[in-house]
Structure formats: structure tokens, C-alpha cells
Amino acid sequence: MTAPATERDASPPQRSYPTDEELLIRVLVPYKEHCKYLKSAEVTTSAGLSCAQGVFAIQESCYIDDTGHLNSVEVNIAYNQLMYYLVAKSVKEGLLTGFEAWTLDDFWRHQLPDILIARFASNFRRPVNPRHFTGEMEFRSVARRAPGGGSPFLHAQTVFRYQDAHGGRCDGEATLAFVNVP
Image (cartoon, rainbow, N blue to C red; front, side, top):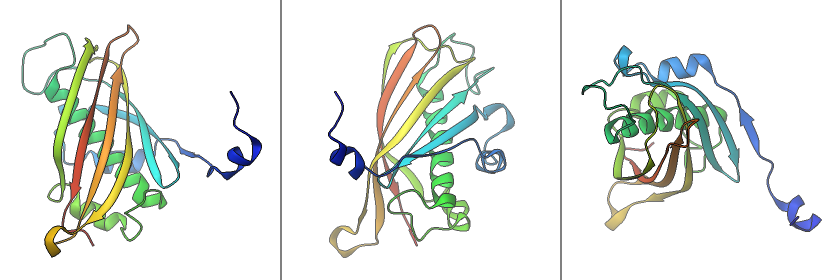
């Protein structure tokens, strides 16, 4: 069913950004070479929120013998890499609500010490082949908070999902806290 013309016209345009190779390399600098799972990512944005679709490959687990499927630790690492890239690209392009005052220098300074996963939940529907899979994550909301007059932080609700070419599927939700924000 198509929305009436006035409703369609009122929606903000969606923009898409292909993989920024230099940015991706820089985002993955903190990771050990054998733990760089994200190979490419495309960012889309609409109405002040962003999402990213990524391609991943895990040739060898960084901590355990081969399980033959994507496991919860690797899901978390893949999430971190796609989330870091999405935030960095959003900051670079001025895409994500709540990050308007950030520069890329702010992102690099905050990437490891100040971007916290406050809650992380994943659901494994069918085993995902870790050798080649795709995934996506999106910001559902970003809000500035200062509980009890304390230090302000950005609170973000995100969702993610991973799949492979053979029907493997995993999804979940994560709550992020960006502390010590500019």
C-alpha cells in the first residue's frame, strides 16, 4: 500500500554512503589483525538516525577452537566494529542526532574509553557461518541525559541482526552510553 503523496513528501530523504576505506581502516586500528572482522560497510541515514549494513569474515576465532558457527563473543566484536564505524561515519558526515557537536577527533578520543555497552542481548535463530556473513545495526534513538544533575551522557538504543547465505540468523538489541561527551 502506498502512502498518500503528502505523507511521502513529508518524509526526509534517505542518504546512502558506501564504504569509506580510510575511515574503516582507522576505526579498526584498536583491533588485533586477526580480529578485524568488518570488511565493508554502507551507512544510510534518515530523520537524524543512522544504520549500517556490513560484510564480515571471521577466518579463525580469536579466543576458542573453531565452533563452526558465529558465537556470542564474535557477535559482540562484530557489533562493536560496525557500531564504531557507523558512529565515526555519522560524525564525519553530520548524520546522527546527538552527535552534531562531535568532530572526528572527538570520536577518536572517545572511541575506546567513553563508548560503553550498557546492555547487550542477542538471540540465535539459526547458526550463522562466521566465514562470510552480513549484518546490520541501526540507532533507534539517541537522547542526552544528565541524571540527578550529574555528568551528561548520550543514551542510545540500537538493534542489530546478522545472517548468512544459508539461512543462518542472529539478532539482538544493545543500549549504549556515550560518557564524557563534549
